[in-house]
Every structure is written in C-alpha cells, then in structure tokens.
Length: 513
Ligand code: C2E
Ligand code: CA
Ligand code: CA
Image 1 (spheres, rainbow, N blue to C red):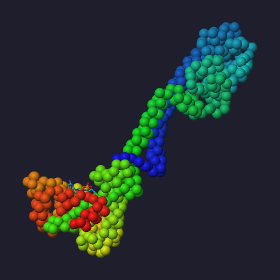
Image 2: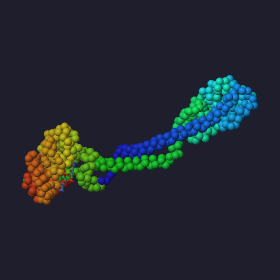
Image 3: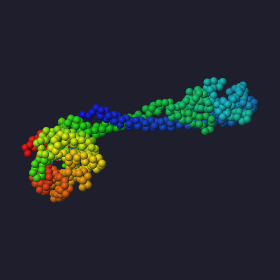
Image 4: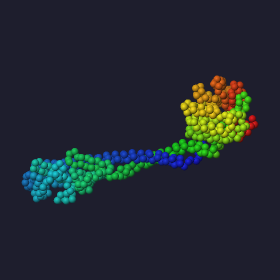
C-alpha cells in the first residue's frame, strides 16, 4: 500500500518521540558515566587522604621519638651536653627541624640558639596540649611549622617539623585533588599558608579523614565541574558509544513510528478524499431468481493503485478503528446513490451492509441506520446488517439495547460467513438474528465434497427450524443454484447472477432484469 501525506502535527509528534527516544539513552548513559566518574574520584580522594595521614603520622612519629628522648633532660641547665643532645635529635631524626626544652612552661633551651632563647609556653595553643600548626616562628616568620609537645609535670620537650615537608607531602600526594592538613583551628593547603578561617568545602568527592594517632585531620576533594572534566578526559570512547546508541534508538523509533502510522494515515487520507466507494452485488430469490436486493461491498479507488480489494484494507481499518467512520461514509454514499432509483426497486428491496463488531459497541449505529432509512420512502427498502460469524459480539446491556433499537427501526440482522465460526443457538437468539448467510466455501463444495454438503444441508435445516431466512453466497454454477433452490434456500448471491458493480452499472442491470 503506497504511503502519502502525513499531517504536520502528527509529524511533529513523531519527531518529538524520536528525539526523546534518542535523548533518553544518551541521558541515561551520561548519568551512568557521571556516577561512575564520581565513584572513581571518591575512591581517589579517599586514597589520597589515607596516604597523607600515613605520611604525616610518619613525620610525627619522628617528632614523638625525639621529644621522648629529650624529655628527661628538661629542667637540666642548658649546657653544652644538653644542647648537643637537642642537636643530635635534629640531625638523627628525619623531618625534625628543631627541638627545645621547657621547664615550668618556659622554653629555655633550643637546638638552634642554645640557652640564648627564652619564651613562655601557652598550652592552649596546642591541640590537646600536643600539636600546634604555627604560621612561622621568629627564625622563619612566614613558613609553616608543626610543633609536637610532650610534657611530664614541669618538664616539657618540643620537636617541630618544617612546613616544607608538609607542603611537599600535600603536593606529591594530591594529583588532581586538593589536600588540606587541619590541626585544631588552623589549616594549610599545598600552598603552605597557615589559615584559621573556616575550612573550604569541596564540591566533588570530599573526603575527611582523622588520624587515629595524632590530633589532626586531612581533607581531600575537588572543585565543582571536576567530574565533567574527568569524564571528558577519560571516557571519550564511551561518550561516543552512548551518543551512537542514542542516535540509533532515535532513528529506530522514527522508523518504527513511520512504519506503524503509515497505513493509518493513508486510510485517514483516503477517507477524507472519498476514495472508498460502494459496489453492489445482486441478491436473487431462490425460487424465481428475481433481484430481491444487493450487498454493498466496499472498494478503495486508490489514485495510484487503482481499485483495491477490501480484504487488503478492511483488516487494517478494523485495527485502527477507522472502519466505523468508513462504514458510516459508505452508508451515506449508498443512500445518496440508490435513493434516486428506489422507485424501480421491488418493495422491501434488501440492502446488505457489512458491519464489524466495533461498530456495535455503542448506540451510534442506530443513528447511522436511521439516517440511511430516512433517505428512502418508508418500507421501500430493508436494511440488512451483515455481522461476520468469525468476529462474535459479546452480549452486554449496550448490545441488547442496540439490537432492540435496530429491530424497532425495521433493520434486519444477518450472520455472515455462517459455518466458519462458532456461534451457538443462544447467540442467534440473543441478537434476534433474521438471516444466516451460508459461507461460500460450503457452496463451492456442492457436487464435490459430501461432508461439506452435509454441513450445508444441516445449516439449511437448522435455519428452517429456527425460522431464520437463509442466503447462500458464492453461487457460481447452475448446479449449485439448482441444488440450493431445491433445498428451499430463500436467497442466492454469486457471480452466476452478477458481480459487484458500481452504482450506475448495477442500476442498469437491475432495470434490464
Ligand atoms: P463478504 O461479506 O463475505 O462478501 C462476499 C465476498 O464474496 C465479496 O468479496 C464478493 O465479491 C465475493 N463474491 C460474491 N460472489 C462470489 C462468487 O460467486 N464467487 C466468489 N469467488 N466470490 C464471490 P469482496 O467484495 O472482495 O469482499 C471481501 C470481504 O470484505 C467481504 O466478505 C467482507 O467481509 C469484507 N467487506 C467488503 N466490504 C465491506 C464493508 O463495507 N465493511 C466491512 N466491514 N467489510 C467489508
Ligand atoms: Ca457480507
Ligand atoms: Ca460472506
């Protein structure tokens, strides 16, 4: 079936859905990559913090050992022996820059100045009396210094680490991240400046680690935007893959939508362009072969494909629900075409119209039939709705009301293709059926297959018992015609009497008969 015009609004919706189908996997993919990057960065800052704590603990171990070794000397005069001991610790212990001794909170002996230097100790400067991150001392005023203090009564020993070692460790360990050493209210970063303002908060992968052995902590983290930078740097291939799959999903969604919506649009377009036309096939009396009515059969007068058979488009129209407006249009067209010739019809001329189960879901069909009948003089025609047996209707309150209303209007009900489905007697009674149309497959078997003939005979017998009219369709040969007439079949339809014809040809044939 060729595909043509699509409404602009529908197209916009289709593009929107395609775009969403593409963006969804891309968005999800980026979200997963972002989550993965964040996890990696978090692991990385946690490792950095651990490494920094290990380094600082190692440095402080040396200061602690130096202080322990010197503490017994505190209180002794700062003579050359004590000064030597102080300098020995500075020389022997890695990271230790200077050592001093105090007595009763007064520093009186130092590895740098010997006894020539005195200073008062304020224990409050030291976190828990132990550690002080200083901004510098008189020797190196702007260089950080981490001082370790050990006291025992009046005795006190101090060992300090130069800020150079601290910044060195911070710089070496922090690669993409920032590292901060915090001792009480003071902190310093890799720039070596000691500050006592609020600690900076890192937007990405912030990790805070407290040393289990000394009174300090380390913070590691990264500035905002670092996750995206990391993703761009590390995941270019995955990014491309995500975009590739997104585009693929979008194209696929577009193609699927186009495929599924094309026939519906095509039918909708054809309906708007009045391309569905009515063909009429005569139905004759079994006894006299007079033309007693017709069946209205839909054809699609396609601009490119020509006349399209109903079995190629009716199932599609049923699927998408367009069959209801299509049938409604067919009823109007039929009324408009036949009404001007109605006085030539025998009285009560049967007009059979095929109806699908979907059309019986509400009472709109009653109005459609009422409009149809209003085009003719009362009693001039009999509208027969043909419901196929392959598509049974569930009896509900609505369907009961529908069929009652149809009967009140004088509309008759025929079960089409009878013998191919499984309608029960209860079903026939429920819908107050008037006619059974024997499926053409049974008629075709007359004189060929004994079993089919038995089924045919049984259907004819059943219709007689139930007082239902019977129509045989697909009558192509004289033999079939005579057999059916002999069985008392009321009406016959088939190529033997006439093929489906457009209105004007049908009317001409009708007059000639
Ligand atoms: P159906 O209702 O059983 O219609 C009878 C079909 O048998 C018609 O085919 C008709 O052309 C064909 N036919 C009539 N006499 C003979 C014969 O002697 N030999 C053979 N081989 N075939 C014969 P058509 O017109 O192609 O319609 C096919 C089916 O499409 C119809 O079967 C009906 O189920 C459906 N259909 C047609 N028009 C409509 C419609 O307006 N609405 C609905 N819902 N279905 C329709
Ligand atoms: Ca039919
Ligand atoms: Ca049929």
